[in-house]
Amino acid sequence: MKRVGRPEMKQPSAPITESPADSALARLMRYLARTGRVVDRERITALTPDASVRAYFRLPWCGGTAVVAVYPEPFDPDAHPFLDVTRLFTEAGLPVPQVIAVDGDAGIIVQEDLGDRQLRAVLEAASDEEREQRLEEAIELIARIQAATTLAAARNSVCSRVAFDEAKLFWELEFFCQHYFGSLRGEELKTDEERRFKDELAELARELAQRPRVLCHRDFHVSNLMVDRQGRLRIIDHQDARMGPASYDLVSLLLDRQQAPPSLAELRERRLFFLEARAARGLPFIDPDEFAREFRLTTVQRGLKAVGTFSCQTAVYGRGKAYARFIRPTLEIVLQALEWLERFPEIRRQIAARIADPIAAEVI
Image (cartoon, rainbow, N blue to C red):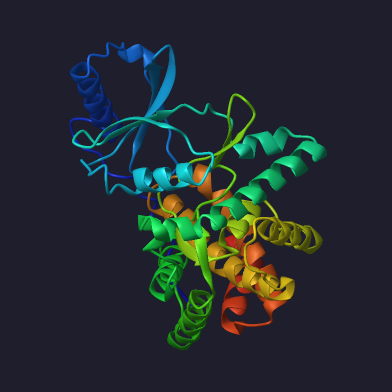
């Protein structure tokens, strides 16, 4: 292993005349003027997206409020992923926000305002009983999404035509290598270590890609679930839905952005509850032991992909305050899964060495 020096944290470049948010706000104001809606700028609130190229605003609308997504480019409403998947999920009875208005030429989607209560915050303040109830609601939503797999194919939805195939899974793992080892830690693996590491990553991607595929949200973590004003659980950020392993969204829900690995007993209980929820909807039987193995494989892939994202956001875009604290716990979760699988020795060795490295404490 060669350490080439921790790279300098980079700030994202900004236009000279106006920030992207200012540009999006100006476009929003033009849209409102063109459609005859008079709204003072002071009554428009900018909302902070999560590592997104979109800008979001809350504003008065028809006696209440709405959330407006302003995209960087015009789009075709008939082919837009968010709108396509929203139509699919709505038809399937899934609780997504209602789309109120669309202007593809302006790059604008006006949607129902679900409020500010992310499930993450609700769980942090919840009693044990409420936490259990909310998690079970979320797990049942995953089963309901998977039950819409056939409908997605029948509608030829965009999400039925993209998948976690081998190329996609491996690309995400290479992204981890680029930004965790390179951007964040400033390291280069030795040639033989890199070869073994990449070979094991390729094996992992190939095996997961061969698993039976169902419809997945793709980012089903507790920050993408909202508790609306009526106390109902609602799904957001679903535009990247695609086909993938049955375990994918469950791994995201239970293990994304955790501060410590959960107990193996808790994970087993959640897996069994999920399989029961699938069975209640008439979905094909999955052997619990086989599902546990797939769950661990997905944990490794999803966890490394997440660490790559956290590392990129920290080292390249200077957003370490929001992301850096999740790097070490996620690596610990990945290592726990690797030890359970008793496979991929080079990945295990490299991850374990960095968790144990005292010099790494300031980095991860």
